[in-house]
Amino acid sequence: MLTAKPTTCIPSKSILMNRSTYDAKLKTEVQPVTKPVTKTGLITKGVGGEYTVVCDGDIYICTARGVFRNRQVTPFVGDHVTIDTNKCSIEDISPRKNMLRRPPVANIDQVIITMAAAQPAFNAGLLDKLLVIAAHEGIDAVICINKYDLHVGSDAAFLPYILAGYPLVKTSLEQNIKESKNIKESENVKNGIHELKSLMDGKLNVFAGPSGVGKSSLINALIPSADMEIGDISVRLRRGKHTTRHAEILTLGAGYCVDTPGFSSLEAEGIPAEDYAALFPEFLPFIGQCKFSDCIHDRETHCAIKEQVGNAIYLVRYQSYLGFVRKAREGSR
Image (spheres, rainbow, N blue to C red):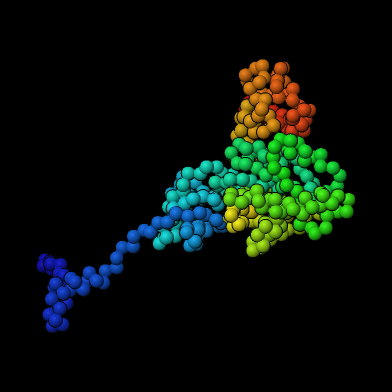
């Protein structure tokens, strides 16, 4: 059986092209291999597996490499990342200084915990949960009492937080505060938006709180170009309808803010019972002064924290602390 030797297809000399000319032409026609071009940037939005990354003013819509999924790592809004601009892929995520899973945001400087004075009713229990979670993650907290124009009665419910040292701002997006409010209080509320904005300058701020308290409305007032969707209040449940469906970073003067999807419930999970006292700022001056070094400030005697209840510590805040501690101890059994 005859076998033919493989041949190299070279143009005939009849078209005046020799081997060296052909090789030179072939090299010019070969497409160069595209080299990765990497940039570092900030994730400002994430929807449906696509992430908006801002790099030195340029905007890229990227997807995360499969390696992150294999490692069960999800990019968060607020992440500092390295991207391949040719593939529009996220190649690396820088270490985070902190993070919240709900809302899913990383590298937060400050959380604006927004509660309504009414419609829906002020919820001290949820506020305490959010404050505890922020403190556990090492995030500063500002309390914003919105819809203050609907508030009736005294501010007694807010005093424990002021005494604890939290910045507390009262805001209303209504032009006319109820006539029952005095002139000084009316001016304070009208100036609340400006006070809030000054507290947010130079920081990455997250708005958090239950649905219907007016987070999106506040952001529209702070950043008119944001044009956030505003929801109504569910009459049957007297709570807000979810309107924000994703977390997104918005520019606010010298700072940034993030509106986050609303939620109706949140649990402080994974925090040891003995860690809770340090998450209540009004407890801090008295920690270490108890008779027993392992005092949990519950049923123990000669407890410095318990001795301050009714003085430097409001009873409602101490009761809230006990709720967290006892639940954590039950969960660890």
